[in-house]
Structure formats: structure tokens, C-alpha cells
Image 1 (tube, rainbow over the protein chains, first blue to last red):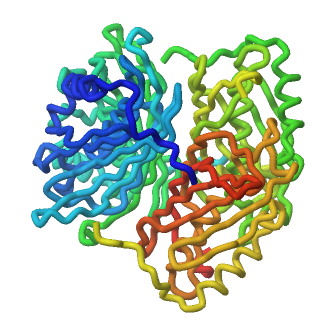
Image 2: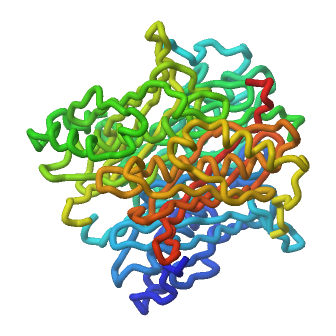
Image 3: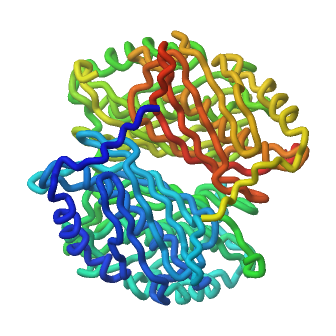
Length: 152
Length: 152
Length: 152
Length: 152
């Protein structure tokens, strides 16, 4: 299969645009999300484990893993849009492969198929332990829709 | 179609069990989630809008709607399990029908098909405005798995 | 919640348009699919059980239930589009609630949220036995995209 | 991340078991499906384009791509089960990345996370043209459930 995902961004200033969007998300501050890597078509977001992020067994809540994965997909999609481009989540599905026990949750999102209107993305969410070992905890497929700011 | 979802709980004490699980979720306190209705096979969870729950346009983040829906489905499933029964989220899909602008997010979950091991659920998430009008913002289909506490 | 799905079609000739599309689908002839009901925002498609439609236990194959549900959703969406409007399946998720044992598979699709570009749909697939009793076998959530013929 | 998917089968006779299940599926004969590759945790199924497999634009119907992907996932899961093990599709989601125009549809499924009861799989579906070039047309995430024959 020929590679289909661009490795260069049409907007040379995509980092600034995405960092601003990330900073504007109140939920990222609430959950302690960090934008740790960003390149055209790819984005990684992390959050440290904290008692305020848990489900009832004291592990990362599925909602936290999903939020990180949603953002990793959304910003991966946004990185390939022209200047001013924003995205909305159309839908996503997440499978939870094993209990998410670890010190850090790491969501790595990538664009599978960019498009003018719709961008298909996927993300894997790992939990990292004290030794730095990562275990795959969840996997997402997502559809993102381009939205110009004025369109909202 | 014959009704398939029980309207009585096998565990007469299901409320206590679910309220304890809800209270044990650190994320519910973080997001301000409230367990506002619970009956066999159905559960409603709400959260008030707050700046700490937003995406970058200042609306409810998809991750918040998803977290509320996941819990509404999970506790709906849990309400039909025998005493001691707990659930894990196997997977879910969420569609985001429109921007989630409102004062309160309301997730209503219900069991579509209970099972000994797997329970299929769905949830609708509404946003409620100052006049009390609710608008459907998101819809989830979820698969929950029964897990005895000792099995974890 | 205020009703959001139109009950009138913008294209008075939507039936002709959909019947032509249905007839043009080679797969519907192969599977024996029948378009049995159609109104604005809703569509029902059936297929009789046949040995050529089975999985390895001799029941309806998940792929058959999915195909009927995909078409029921797609034509429900198409019924609300302006003249000439066609749809493509963007994505769908299907949950298989129980083994699909029956004489007829019946997929009932409906529009949950129409849109200019994207239409959100859902479908339930029932199996009907000799007594006419229907049992819910599968449930779909789907995203459809409007596509003008010339756009292809 | 440590590799988690076994590369050896517990049942040395898994090929015979899967080939028998494949042959017992009436739908595979109807659609012209071929089991072209099988190893522990992986399965590839193909079907040639034919007028009887089309949607209304004359391309492969989404239902055909989905059926091939469902089987590729199901047999990938089945290859890792002990002797006698069978699988049922619990649920799957498919994204359709581009119109499926080609001579052959090729579904490659693999196990992402095996389990005693549930197995998580994914599949990519490509369309191959006359020059042998493959283009990714659809992508599936699926949950399969182990079912002993007697349990049905």
C-alpha cells in the first residue's frame, strides 16, 4: 500500500495553532493532560495517574483514557489542516483491552486517512509503569470533521 | 418484540452497591458527576457545566459526555447483576450529534440486552439549557462485562 | 427533547430515487434483500433465511445483518436529502445481541440527526420466526455522508 | 510495549478447524470468499469483484468489505483458541476510508489482545487493482467471544 498520510503540514504554524487549542481546553488542565509530542499527522498526550482520575477500582477511568485518545486524534487531524483549521469529533469507538493500571497514561494518535472534510484517525493508549514499561490498555478509531472557526 | 430487559433487580441491595461504586470513582468528584436516577436496568448521571470541563470552544468536552455515558451504561448494567457484581467497560462507541452547549449534561443509560457475562447498553447524552429544554448531543452503544470483585 | 428528525421529505420523488438505488445494488439481489417500507427518515429492509446467507452454525451471518442494517440506515438518510442526493457509509458499529436464528431478518433504520453533510442513523435488526415473533438480534449506529452523484 | 499476541497456536490442528468452519459458511460461497492465508493470530480472506457484490455505484458494497473483515477477525481469533474453540462476533466497528473500487477485496485480520473469553481484533480491507496495487478501503475493530460448540 502506498503511504497516504502526508508527513508535512500545509500550515507551517500548525504547532502554535494546536498549542493554543490545547491550552484553551479546560478539561486538559482538570485532568493534568500534557501535549508531549506533535508532528504532522501525529500527536501524543499524557496524563499522570492521580486519585481524581479513577474508576471504582482505583485505576485510570475509561473516560480519562478516552479523553486523551480523543484529543490525540483530534490534534493529529488538526495538524494537517490549512491555517485556521479546527476539528470536531464526529464519533469514536474505544476498546479497553486490559485494566489500566500504571503511573502515566500515554495516548498516541495518528491520521489514517486525511480528507478535506473528514479525517480518519486511530489512537493507542498505553499505561507506563515505574520502570518505563508501556502496556497497551485501549485502542480508538475516530472520525474527525474539519470546522473553520467562523463555521461555528 | 417481547421485552427482554428485566425490570426487577436480582440483588435487592443494588442501590447501595452502585452508590458505593459511584462514590469510589475519583473522576466523578473531579468532574462533578451526580447519580440522579437509578432503577433496574437504567441509570442517569448529570454534571453541571464548568470551565474545567471544556474543549477549546468552551463547550462540554466530548470526553466529559463520554465519561458520563460510560458510567450511566456501566451502572445500568451493574444494577441487574447479582450481589457483589461489578462491571468493566469492554468497549463503546459514541456519536456526537451536535455541539454540546448547555448548563447541564445529562446521560441516560439503559440495558438493551443483559447477559451472564456481557451486557449490551446504550446511552443518550442531552444538554439542558436554562429553560430546562434538553437537546440530544451524543449517543453511545456500549458493551459491559461482569466482573466479580475477586476476579480482579 | 424537541423532535429533530423531519417527517416530510424535501424531495417529493424520494421513493423513486431510493428504489432505483436499491435496484442498482447487485448485493441486494444476491442476498435476496427486499425494500419493504420507506418513509421520510425511516426504511425497512428484509431478507429471507437461505443456506447461502449463513455463518458456520447455520444461522444468519453477521455480515448479512450488517448489510441489511447499513442499507436501512443509508436509505433512511437518503430519503431526507434534496433531489439527486446520494449517500456513502462513513462508518458504522454493530452489536450482535444474540444468535440470529429465524426465518426472516428485518432491518429497521431511522435517522437520528440529519445534516447537510453528515446524517446520523441507527438500525435494529430483528429475526422473525414462523409465528411472526420478532427478536432483536443486532443494533447499529451509523454515520452517512451526503454525496451528489457528480461528486463521485 | 512487550509483544502480547502469541505466535504459536495451542491447537496444532487449528487450520483444519478453521478451514471446516470457513467451508460451512454458506455466505462465503455466495460472495466468493477465499481463505488465502492463515497463521496463529492472523487471517487473510479475499473476494473477487463481481456485479453481485455491488452497492449502487457499482463498487464493492460496504457489507461485503465488512463480511470479509468480520471473518478475517473471527478466524484470527479462533486460531488462538484451544481445540474445539469457536467464536461469535460480539460487535465491530468499520470505517470506510474511500470508495472501494478494485478487482479484489483483501481483508487482513489480526488479534490485538487474546483472552480466555474475549479476543480483540482488528482488520484492514484493501482493494487490489489490475497492477496488483493495494489501497486501504476500510478498517475494522472487532470483539470476538469464545464459544465452545456445546455452549450454543
